[in-house]
Length: 169
Image 1 (spheres, rainbow, N blue to C red):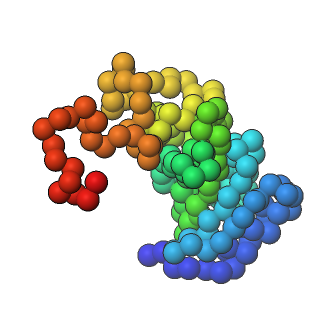
Image 2: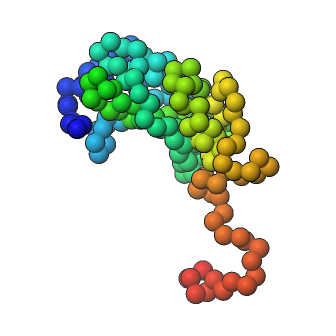
């Protein structure tokens, strides 16, 4: 069973501050785990450090998913890591410009990230630089939009048989 350990959170922040000064943009305890926000250009090195550090040992990538922030015109990637040795979890966030949505791949750190990165590409349009086989896996190959972006139309705008006045529009 996972239990909150404030010492572990402090250790992670201290180690990241020591090895990556001025890289951590923001950190907080959100719900049940430490959440750290870093710049896109440092994400690969930071995740590699978290995996390889003898005290931290975040050896398992639980999940990787995309995010869309339309108010800032950015796309983001969220990584959830778990240290089985220390029974500690952490959430790492990074963001990139929506027009040039490129994030370094972490398939060299955790090969299991392969399909997770392909899914984030498929649904959000995030390019994972250095990915071995970045292509759509769930949507049609000829699809040009990214359906999990918040600006993706949910309804067919060409329908004429629908009365929007019933829905306050």
